[in-house]
Length: 211
Image (cartoon, rainbow, N blue to C red; front, side):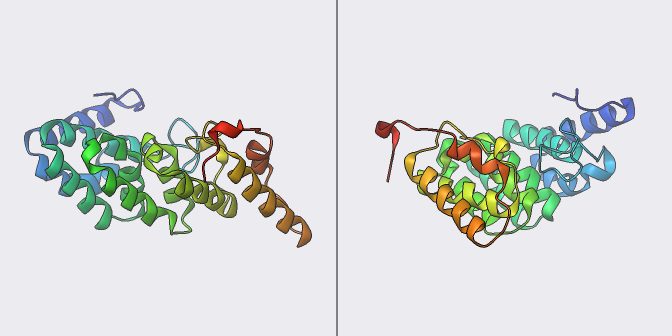
């Protein structure tokens, strides 16, 4: 267990207790996951952002430890079912933690990961959008879906620096899309987010361009 993000000894003990309980009875995560922030810790994580847009909050990190314990003690299929339930029955904070933990799923559960990311990206909740695009599971998005996710971040103000795949996955089509977006903003007399230049300043090789 990695509890180095917690500064208080009481919080570490509380987390260790919850992790042990989930490891012994994985189905208990349904009850312990929502209560994790209250029982262990909440607030800004290493990024300093209490909203969890720039990086995981303390409660996100606590819940990720519970997800790791559940994954270690549960077969891949039932774990995927548990993750789905935690997301669909959770509040926005719980959903954010689930999205950050999608990389724990077995590769066979990739369709579920894509489904949950797509659901988050349909919202205008910047915390959910950032969590969906910031983790390793974002690699599962096909290039079309990933491009749309980048544009979603520009529209909602989620920093592109936290989007997995920028600039590695940037291709000529995304450059074109972002250039069109910037031009439309300029014509309307609206400010263009500085982040757009993380894409426009990238010159992908033609051989890496996908339709």
